[in-house]
Image 1 (cartoon, one colour):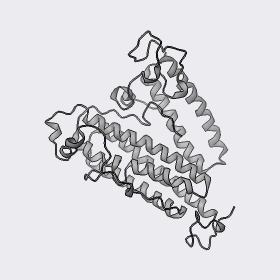
Image 2: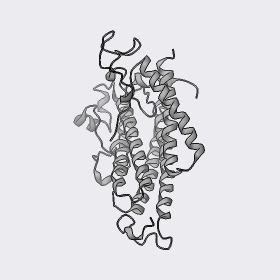
Image 3: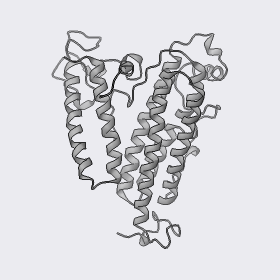
Image 4: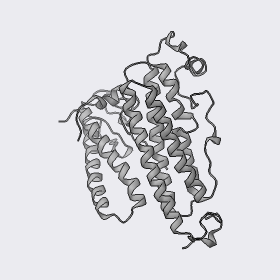
Length: 203
Length: 107
């Protein structure tokens, strides 16, 4: 279960309206490597994870991703809070505005709506953790791309925080993968599915 | 009495330290030094959340005190009246709740 804490994980304080920037950052809400996909990926994968400590890590990182999703939404909300009708015509934001006004709706920057196919829950610990490692790197690359094209320091501060978290999560997933490997036969790590073929997993 | 943004900044920093250490301890469950630090900061966070709720409004459901009506320093639609305080204070995603971002200095 979850409970809510009435604050953001890292403060978001943006005073300048910028629908163009919002239309780019929204990818980290509903895009292919966004925070919604990240959270759903980890929280879906954890149930069948054969090692309960790794299941616990997936819960904790999946939970933090929800806090990141909230920060991304706060950034977009503040960037469009005082939007004028004229500003709504900004290229990149105009089509979104027609369908959602300034409400939050998960979509990629390129306009593709959020889709569960953005992530996998494969039921194989090595497969899933390898996907998680790649996912953290892809999210980090997306933050790199955003940081390169955005120059508002108020927007950059939370983006830099979020980028750093991708690096920490990559480190932790790497450690989790090592832990799973420790419970397997070193001669055939990739030979079977440790979640399904449980007879091969050390107690 | 400490001001709202100073306290929020302290809560934010202490909580983040715990968020990060929790993930570290998930993969290093035998690190006694880290566990000791976790315990110290956990106590600090508990104290800060309690003080913040007493002076302003609850940030977690465990900090809600239905028998109390809220302090005079809270942002509320029901000043001076006994009321449900969970919706007091600024909305977390609004500028007002995040003004501590503009403060200078570290811990």
